[in-house]
Length: 330
Image (cartoon, rainbow, N blue to C red; front, side, top):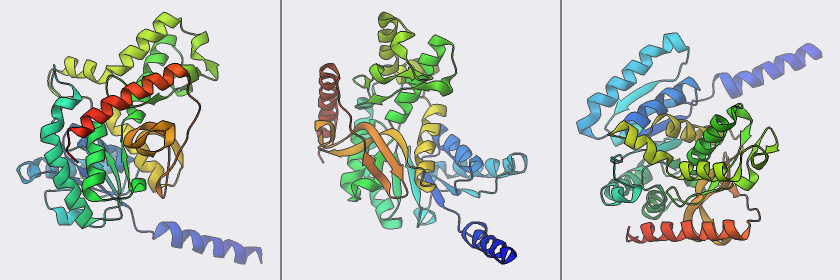
């Protein structure tokens, strides 16, 4: 009887795992972030990967895909990666991650990108709607809060299928700076950044801990304020150092965490730009809030009580988001 149970369980495992169709992940934009997204997604074996870009860049994405395929013998992943400029190759995609658009240059803020990137986002939204209307979509393109709003409006996708990658990256930067300051492992740092993906974002230092110990007990208030301020302009700091282009390693990993939580139904709580409908007093805008991501996409926004100062800061960042969104005309 025991042997029969073992055989039945083994057969069930084979049916649900061994022969299960791989998920399909399409990366819109084959630049620095897109290439790193493809690498990480393949290494984690989240599914087969399509690296998409405009016809002018087709050779580049095909070359990156071939290079990644040739990396497989070393890394041992079996995910298939292709490069293309043909939208039909994205049909029935499970997860889209959109990085398409021009990057920031020194002296530019994210809002300076609005005009050009809005046109790109409208085209991408219409094509995704045609090719994969049930996909989960993660937007990275800047200005993030306006771009994810634009995708939602143009595509008509429900709010659970659309999310922006902002808070995951901002919170990771905050965690990194706290770890660098204290000298302790970044794995033991827990913190959160709310609000828009810009200079008005709201680091919630009150809830930050290192191994359960409040950060306020480890870092002097004045120094903690400096770390908060550095977090707000962390993207611009990298842009200045590069001289041309913007960050790509950390943004890629941040988006992959979100995609993995969806594909594997991990129900991670990740700060994301989600569509709020009353949460934190926000209505009708995508803004960084603690978000549960599982197999249904955006499954829940976790609210918690803010201090009066935090409320004021969140209202300030909301006004900045509203201003940028209004300029989309959508």
